[in-house]
Image (tube, one colour):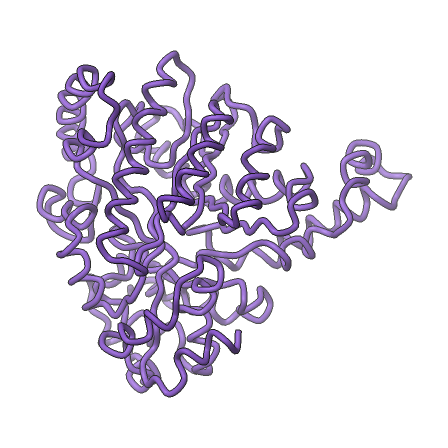
Length: 433
């Protein structure tokens, strides 16, 4: 870490690299990036997407996209590069890791932004739409060289094609690595512990492409039991993403690919210590206690694992800690400061924009400056390969000053609108939010 910090020596501002932001073009913006043979079908999809968007707007209102106001007004935050740059710089952010945020052509729903497959015969068109997104994203990131690390989408039903796409993404400069879709129960897609995905993991390790998994991935169909199904989604969404961790650990992915780096984003951090304790407990019983059921069921699997789950985590796993709450920050030493990568989640309604400075003051109150800088920038720079020498001048121009972040935030000064972001949660008195 010392070679990284040398680039920021003497800087009186923090370098902010958000490990969680989202972008994507308008439905019409995908057109130039879509293969010619799909253009006719694409026009039909455009008509459908317009009608679907109207329905979603009626159901979700202003909360379906952006941070305030009408979705038609704030949607530009996904695709307008100049306006986005102006807003993120005003928020103090120097660089971004960018996940998808708009559904590409032929997606089964208008909220299919993570490349997940569903049962059906339309897989080839779906894959074409995903590749169109990747090519748009490469151009979008190239508009601000060195400041946007775009994440390439792949498609689990097409393993060989995904491997080729990962190689293309490396050449195209999508330094955010690869988004690993989920495989929810009932989706007919093979689970992440299936050996069929081995070529994907192998090429990611070979090319040094980080492998990312984001909350919202792997969730099953909760059914149309409104409004209860929406509440169930919110209650369980992070757990379904957590699940990918033990799928990869116990299927031997981390064992076979010790240099593969895996990032779980927007899934919180407070769960880590307890979960790793449980996983280590299962591992120990499966491997050493020949009198228990865990040994019978799991022994052959863990026999191929040379490390305990907590050791794999220490070696290969990172957390995209979106809008890190103070309570989670207080547990940073239990989790590992080197594991936590702060994220603003721009432009989502729950993100910290445009109250990031207030969020930093609240979350990092009393935290040493070097620990803050590690979590809000240096960890992400190490994982995603950002050039700190190039980013240091940007941070010197726009970053929040260390002195302002050090000022304790009085909750009475928190704008009411800021409570859209979980970073401002008041566990002591929820009624005062």
